[in-house]
Length: 241
Image (cartoon, rainbow, N blue to C red; front, side, top):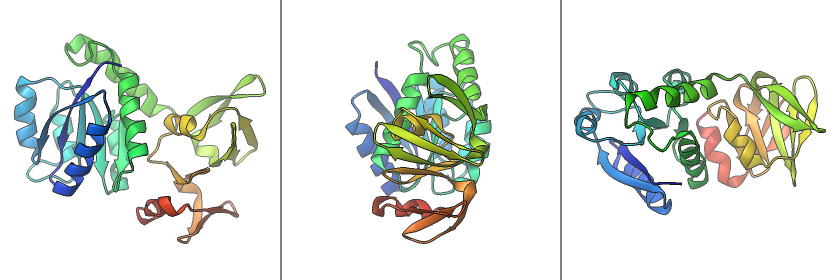
């Protein structure tokens, strides 16, 4: 994978430092600048082309979503915020991914790998190159289902039907409102196929649909009457519910 040039638009110094440290850990990411203000970032983008923006929502003067709407040919955008309620608007604007703070490195890496997968060699350099790129991102964001290999055939599973996903060694069990499916895919792989603002990993072995959570404590969540454990390293996810 060739280098992905990126900038950070973030007014919180600690959050910007976390992103900077993460970017330095990824060989194919090249940080071009850090901006506390979206207006200053706009000025930079007039004379410079980047492949990816890490964008906070709550910024001084010009908010992140408003800034995004001003870009005629935006590069890939990964939203970084503590507020999940902007997820739908973000995907309406074709963002590549949506990361909730505090951001774990593993989740960060999934997002940048997704940006790298969607990126074409000449992406964002010409408006003609941007159009299909943005169309592909939009199509992925608008999907309401996925197809998984189940017993030698591709089975369509609606996101709205999924209750939770459980890792079972080489397989995952997808529990839906209708039935259960067993597919030979890792939890990391299926996580990249899900609209992650709607699904969250709460344990090394479990991903749940946030809309299907009926109740929760620090130790477990209840989905459709089933108690699912919350991993110690994933308890911050519940804080954002």
